Image (cartoon, helix red, strand yellow):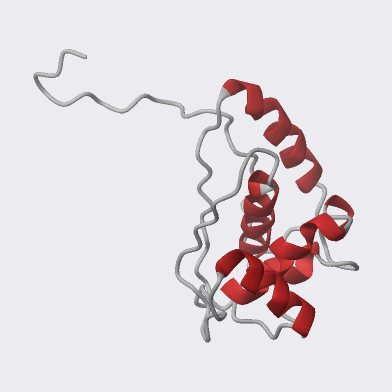
Length: 151
């Protein structure tokens, strides 16, 4: 069985390929392949060197930091990574463990875009590792203030 990775999911023929069409996503594909220590073509190595100025890691990274400007695709790539992780097709979880995907709240003007992307991703096939109930759009309670706090 082929393992689903974020790079394979956004590549042509992949699970999320319809949302990542065109050569503008090639650098992200190369970066994701490097981050997950996947084999890379000479072109992907070239693209990786353009943005990273180093050799790709030999093992999957624990953390990925990407410096990208507005419109650089950060939200879309984060969504692809979260989707692949939520489907449970990875070797990060032991049998029986359930992963939790934590998404930070975005400014209000970006929330509508993410909600519409989220609705589209709910149509994807689910695995037993994913939650069967929809996520709440905001927390049910507010964090408690420390004793003596005035603000």
